[in-house]
Length: 251
Image (tube, rainbow, N blue to C red; front, top):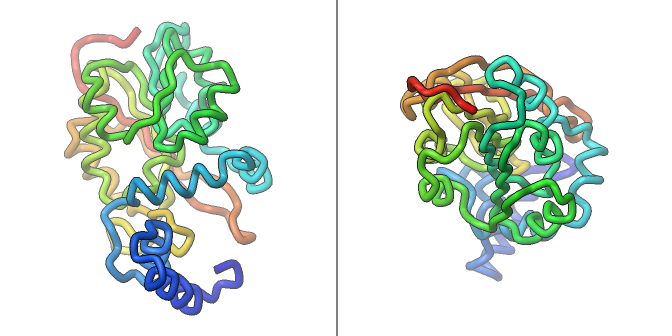
């Protein structure tokens, strides 16, 4: 993979899956390398395995890549929300808490949720969250209806190909006039979404706009951004801001 020899990497993952048919990592990465049997979203077991493995070195690795998705999202929040620290905030796919440190000043109550217990353990060390839970994101949001003024998902929905389930769950969890802010990697072809060799999905802008509308959200804006550098190239992305329509002001 690091050499760009994706066909040969696919052969390795195919052999791995033959040896370990239940391996979520081998199954997901085989799909990523070959575009065969591509799932609508990454399997929960793949996410848990991947991020538990990288939790201890995650922040240092992202720093080397110039990762800036949390900063890009939080820097624009003032255009849409009051910055008086009275918001109920969900950090969706919180990871080690990089976003949480930036969101603390916006929050009356800050909740973080992630599938990886290893990531949650690292986030807890930061001491900025009021609540941290290990849970599947969509199920968690469906269980907390009308709970949040702000939901932030920095580089979380890149593990979803089809966005409808996640956006519908976020719509349920938002209060009227609440804001959803998330990043995606941008696709420049005609496909709605596509699984890339790195294991994440890229999305077409028109599809994102349609999925936001289908979830009952009003698109505020899509900013085209550079999320990080990877394999020597800028990763082109989108910072998306959408609001749940309603008559009640947040805060």
